[in-house]
View 1 (tube, rainbow, N blue to C red):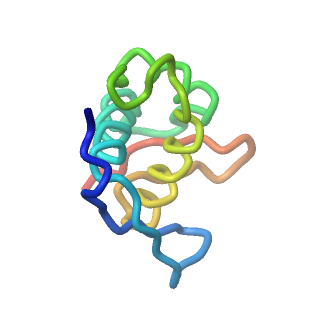
View 2 (view 1 turned 45 degrees about the horizontal axis):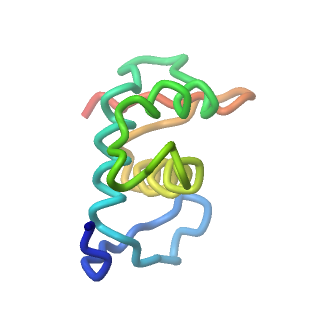
Length: 101
């Protein structure tokens, strides 16, 4: 069973001075899946496309049947944007891609 006491502090690009403590294992599982599917160049994937693509990369241990994947995707997305690891394109709908650091 996952260790629910191990936490990581995340940020949000939409609330720059706000942090949240979340389950480290779930965060890392979602981050790994998201980084595996995002392209390195614009225009990137829409959030819906990203969710569809990453579901097959998620651990059934942490996300059985994709449960709560949408919430975790958004949390990881906003944290990685705040850290400039991923970016969003300039137009609607939101499209995500990795930065070229």
